[in-house]
Image (cartoon, rainbow, N blue to C red; front, top):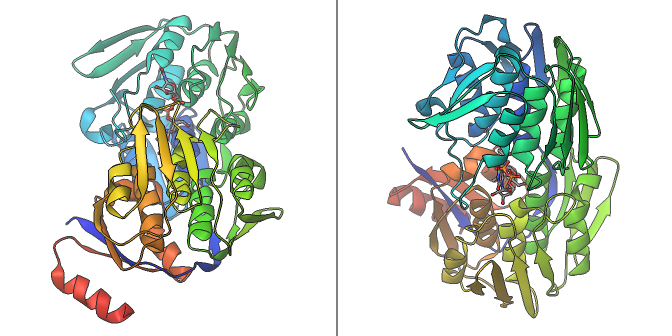
Length: 433
Ligand code: EPU
């Protein structure tokens, strides 16, 4: 049964919220975990759909996957019997492409269905494939599958045309047990790239320079067991920062790495939000009306594309004219029409959204077009006057753990109810009125 969120807006968020582990780091780490025949224990795993899908895919090829609790998993890849990941098991997630790098790196052979994921624009994987070929693999795409195989993998110098997160992680996976040395130039520097490198190193890999644009990998012969805790999710934290600011609230966001949030904190401070950093928390509060600014999404440490819809929502409620330029994905403004239905004034020209700040938003029935846009629309609903219903929340559930529960714990009036259940709507309205 499809669910939707129902929200009554207008309540400032207050209190404390704990951020879960990083989804996009976890996807790479879970793929990496099957590369050793020893048992690996991974903690601070976010309990979200994308993660459960990749765990099922790993189990499906024979690995032992033991869920110790919602956030901890034990994996043993020694029992893998198959290197084929079919469409049904991974069509829903983009991170499935990491199984290509991991299986190729371990078994010199992998057949993985072309990835799905959020529809945020065309998402080529040419850099991944170019790199596998540079390491000595033969790569063919046939019948929707990517088939990669090699007699043996040999380190090489790889220059990425674009600083791709996915390609950088995939190269680390495929090359960490290759013969000799691999160098990735123009590597992505995102925190989750560093986390995957740290995890691989904890299993005995030799990867240096992750977090800079040049990563050097010296192949090792085997990887061993490890216990590892995933970093906190930068984007979940950023989303709660924006929700706190947009609702004129006061929220302590815990279990974060403030350095990873600086690209967001700096912009929030610039428009008038108070952001106070602690060792592993940030306090975000806001009382006054905010100012306009210019945002351009860029690879880390630039402003993250995964925070673009959320900041645009905040700017839709800030004084003056703001611009938001999306430079990574061409189809990431699909939420704009929904926000406009709530009273926002936004015009999209090419890859730039021109936002005229309005005084307030009003509730409407809207639909989440993708993961981050869906989260941004929840923020809009929390601010809007009256009731908002948001359907297609399965997108949001791909990447945010207990989103509505965490928002509700901060005082928001939000509930998950079945779509087309008029009685549930009436019950919610009675409860909150
Ligand atoms: N690109 C290419 N060729 C490639 C790979 C990428 O041209 O072979 C281009 C893309 O079209 C894009 C840019 O390079 O313009 C960056 O793409 P990247 O490869 O870095 O993105 P990704 O690995 O597909 C990950 C996250 C996304 C996040 C981006 C950017 C995962 C599973 N996904 O995608 O997360 O937006 O990095 O940071 O890690 C999300 O979580 O909502 C999400 C979409």
